[in-house]
Length: 279
Picture 1 (cartoon, helix red, strand yellow):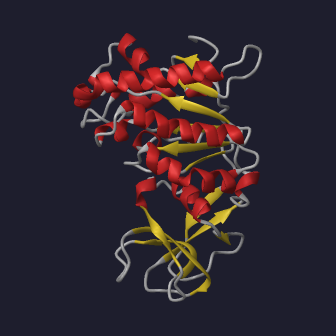
Picture 2 (tube, one colour):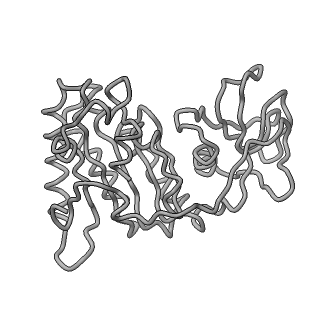
Picture 3 (tube, helix red, strand yellow):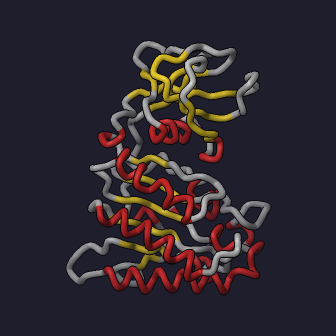
């Protein structure tokens, strides 16, 4: 541990791990759930259910209000007139439509009863197998920037609160990759932190990584992380739990030699070995 607000690795030092209770399933084509299962009633729950059934957040395609498609959360795979992926239909009745399959939950809602930890952010979180963290849900989306996360932070905090204890966040690398300066990316990050902390929850930030494929951005990554370290320090109060905790991934990976084995073949996204350090 580096200080009250900084950890080298890993998230498990701060977050409890156990087998989660809520369940989700992709039912047979139609507009009903099997006995003992319920239709999913919100976009947030649909996003959480996707993770529970083993799909990444980038498979969420959007919401609609259509009487001719299954109500609530549903899944399309080679269904005429429907882009493959997950959809949320606000129409409360809906109807069976071809091979479209309802996504059903058991013990999933209300979300506030099943959530103490909410994982948000980009592909680093989206591809992270977080189901082992007790009372947690993962709504991250590959490709998200801090701007994208901030856009839906209020809605997610409302949906998963008020019992949230932690929000685990990774964002900023994509902002920088798309040309945003570290100072502006930090302002976006700070806006997310401020909203989370205002609810009484704490935020755990997993820092940037020295990815072999992004060497041209490493200086900007370090600048971005330094701004976050300074902000975390400013929020820390001796004797109280710091509201913003940073897992300092970049220097930890460097200390371990930052081998290519920490990453997938693209030398960008974490491999199982890399995620094992996070866990």
